[in-house]
Length: 172
Image (cartoon, rainbow, N blue to C red; front, side):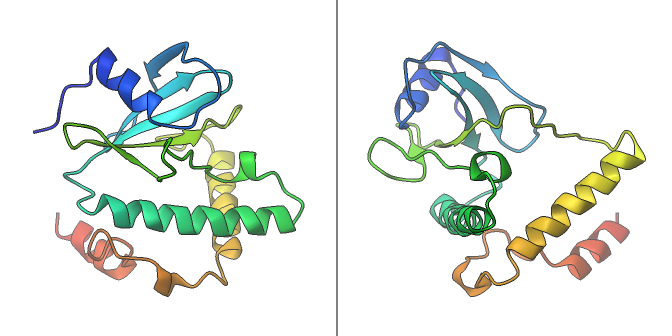
């Protein structure tokens, strides 16, 4: 059973990360259905997430994968003259230098820089949105084209197997 998220739980989780400035507010953010997501307002804004341990059973492997991919993307974006703080997720380390924080109840938290003026959609509203999402995904694939995927750990069996996912959806 997952622990209730109280203000004290949020304060402790937020305090575990290397954020800049004093925490002014922490409010629920977005409409995700897997993790619990909050916007932290400090000197700059951050995203704080409690990861769903029922879905992600190997949090260290998940976070290692995210660290590897985001570090790789950051270098690629910098080499192309881009802005990695807008074009890539940026993990915020814990105060002891880790990629995630495990609270006393065993819940696992991660933090990212908040990307100002970014949008995400649960549903496509216009053809342009669909086109832009395809363009973004294509760029993501291009940036990762020479990433050594053998470094990654499979954290959910067959999750990225398109053929398997297609047949699973067809059986519903």
